[in-house]
Length: 329
Image 1 (tube, rainbow, N blue to C red):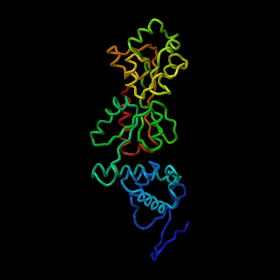
Image 2: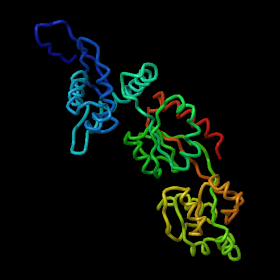
Image 3: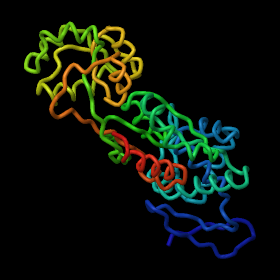
């Protein structure tokens, strides 16, 4: 058993215990201050002593001192400082897995029932703009009425998943399958996609548009897309035409509602989730160019970092979204 030096005149017996990754934890007199774990969790999540200090409303030297105190208790370094931030050591990764849920649970209880002792940390959620407004906010309405704070980020799925992996978001709803290490994802719901145009554009296309000739004919019309990678358009082309698209998008707008506005104005054609067009189809402001026998279906995913779903707010939001997702189509 490794020896532990006891300084001063206090020669009471001291003990050591093994922590994950083989670190030596010194069982010093007195309980561990939970504030040290809270500071550790913020540094781990933000990857920066300075960002953690800002979130905790304390000075950066105070953060540094608290991490050093925790490292003394654990017996090994927890972070490696570098030019752009701080990288967790294997011991920190192990500690974070055990500490994050407990720290968040304590903060949640203190904030909800006492309103003090701990930062009121909002639930940080990322998703496409149409899903935030049409589906996510209504699904989480009960939580929001119960004074849960929510901060949303609107961006493309790949960018949101990168922020999730970096600890900058708690939950992401993505229209692509997450493939990043440390990310857990469940299918949330399947949505049907439609190839749409304005009535004027559809009238021009009608005399010459058949399923067999569609890829060639459609290539002559501007393509309006949600993203340069055009995942929905590519999926539609492969599902219906069994071929790749032959042209790049002419207009890229990272908001499906803006995409539909451009298409209504006869700027071009697009592929969007069908539910977004229900009112337009009923009003005649947009029309489907084709009606495949089997409409293309894409899967939307609910993604979290491994272990985060154990946190009270994340768990509650995760459960509500999964339940509501069963009713979406």
